[in-house]
Amino acid sequence: MGTVLPDAVASVVSAVRDTAPLVHCVTNVVVTNFTANMLLAAGAAPAMVTDPEEAPVMAGAAGSLLVNLGTVDADQAAGMRAAVDGATAAGVPWVLDPVAIGVLPLRTRIATELLARGPAVVRGNASEIQALAGGTGGRGVDSLDTPDDVRGTALDLARSSGAVIAVSGASDLITDGTRVVRVDAGTPLLTRVTGVGCSLGALVAACAAVTPDRLLAATAATAWLCAAADRTTSPAPGSFAVELVDRIFDIDPEAVGYGADLVDQSPAEGGPEPTRAGS
Image (cartoon, rainbow, N blue to C red; front, top):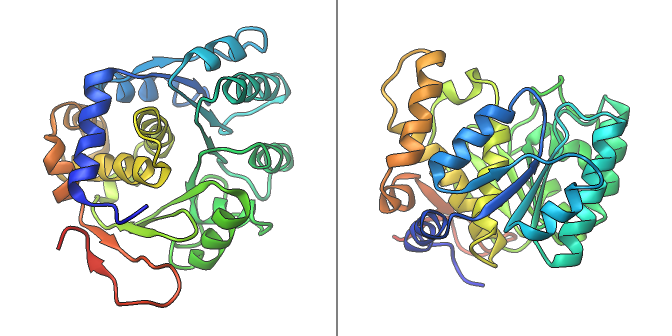
């Protein structure tokens, strides 16, 4: 599939804004409003349908689907399964965000079940990715691992599942099992606002709606969020959250591609030293 270059990332951002894909989110109650606003700022159209009767209809009509396990219960899980059924039947790409799996039994079982159903992308922090591969997970939503700690796990999980694995952290790692891209931009304030990681999952889904290259979609979404965060000026979480939405809205697509400090680490095993993408 080639190297993920800044110009390709910029083209995905432009495509989301130009086509306004409908992104169906079966997500957690803590982040619904923030996620919808982030999608609207990006130029996408959010839908938040969870009822098992309606969820497959909406998922089948959408450009992409996000399934986020942040506040999952048995009723919402039924809506998730139905939404995945609808997306799969319609050939709609979907993103799995396995929030806080590992220690908590219900969501861990559901995440394992959904992974086997063929998500296009799995987006999570390092401990969540470790747990999805059979590890213990982190401390609730907080990761006890780094993307570098789970690099091998992410590569193996991508190869075994067929999904792109996007591992969030201080330096994000994204792989399809062969290609590996790092995004080194961002600010520590991203960890001080509820819903940023969950909104990233929605941005990944928006990008997956406009390109068949799932690694490019996950890279573009991560770069978009991180480059936008780097352009904020607020020193505190509350105003930062508002400004982040604004920067998602007004950042230039080329500033995403060239400002996110992309590092191409392909090939995944061996090969030459990593190079800056586009260099």
